[in-house]
Length: 615
Image (cartoon, rainbow, N blue to C red; front, side, top):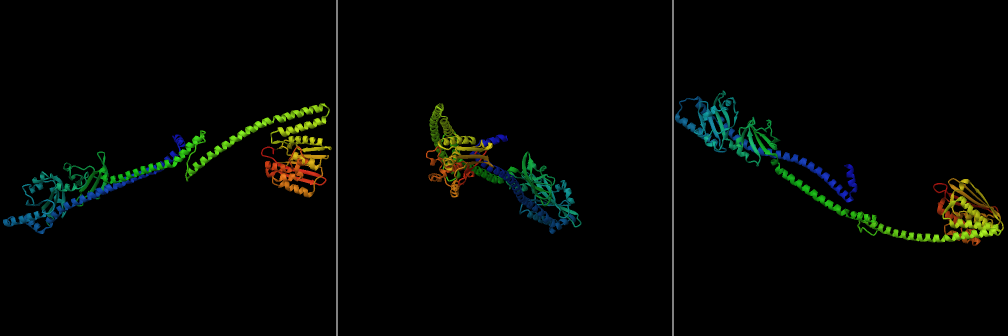
């Protein structure tokens, strides 16, 4: 898989690579950012949803608390009102033969006070039940007989209350016939009336319809279900009256603190929030689908998320468009390069600009122009070369013809009894063959010495007094390669200027000398004076190339065969120096040593070239 990916990357164009790199550099951080953002958003949404649910439930708790406080206020008023309590004690502990009129008026006054307690605020039913069976109510006893309370299961529990303790009676079926149809359940609170000796002489019961509680629950947002439960998790009040009296299975443990939790209900997450009631162990519980709880908050985050996605896609498309525009010249340059590879040198990119791609296109077009010019030049050179080779082949006919003619003349001369002339013609033929027929620039030293021997033989035939050629060559030096005719101009100078065409000896010595070949050409002629020698050495070691012609015209020792008028060679010592320095560089040295009347010696130091002992 990795190998295939690498091959795909290798085969893709630079545009695709840039696009892939840009998308990766944008996509990876964007995805990571979105993942982190989503995680943080979900946590923030959860906290905000819980906060909203607790705030909403706190508002409902305030309303429910006020409603329950109003019930306790009524009970407190009756319990602490001295006039009412004095009258109640008189009824319970006083004479049974009280004045009927006074009893009627006192009873009416108590009922008026009970009625006045419920004129303002929520409608409530107040019952004062005395120990002797006397009772006072703010409702008609035809709806409900207060003495029936004594048979209720909770009535016996009232005897355990102390002082201002209250007993909250949970939801129970409505006992008031007039309200039973519309309000099937009621909620009550009860207190005891006690003497200083703690003996009970009466009971106070304040009742409100359960509907008065669940009306407050409807003020919350749709989908949020609120209920009032007791310490045993039984539902006391709810908008769904069918659930009253049932156990709420999703309630948590009582902690006395507001708490929230996300609980799965029938496979769906619900946000459940609990708010304790300060008067008893009852709690308000709100239950809402988690998706509905976060719908408003999530919509905001979702809009931001969608905006980010749209922005990312927009900027990504813009980036890809810009990359396409930026790399378009490169794509054209690639197509032009492919066309050039196929052999089309007439195509041009036409890319121009101030940036690197523009300059690259301009230089590429210039390179193609130059390549075409060079191809034209090479074609022209090859044409000239072929013509020159043809002329060379044609010219080779003349030397061969000349050699054959000279050999024929030599054989006829020998047959007629003139071996000396035959020998001269043979030496001339070999010398011409070495000069004309050889194409190599370098030859072995022994070949150069053979050429010199023939040259000296020819020169001896021209002179009245022969010159002896002596060779002192070490074996290792014989195979060293040297430029052709390196010794001929020096030997020619020795014959013409050193020996002055008279008898004498020319000695040639050669030996390796520390990475170079040491050649010495020495004659025993007239030599030269000190001034002339110093002048010659200065010219040999420092003159420019153009000075050799001027020096030759002066008739000095460097003129070589020019002073002889039509001699075989036209090279002088300066020509040799210039030629050798062009081939070997400044490491080549030529030095002339001479004394008047003792002869002249020309010493050459020729450095070896790389490889074997070749120069």
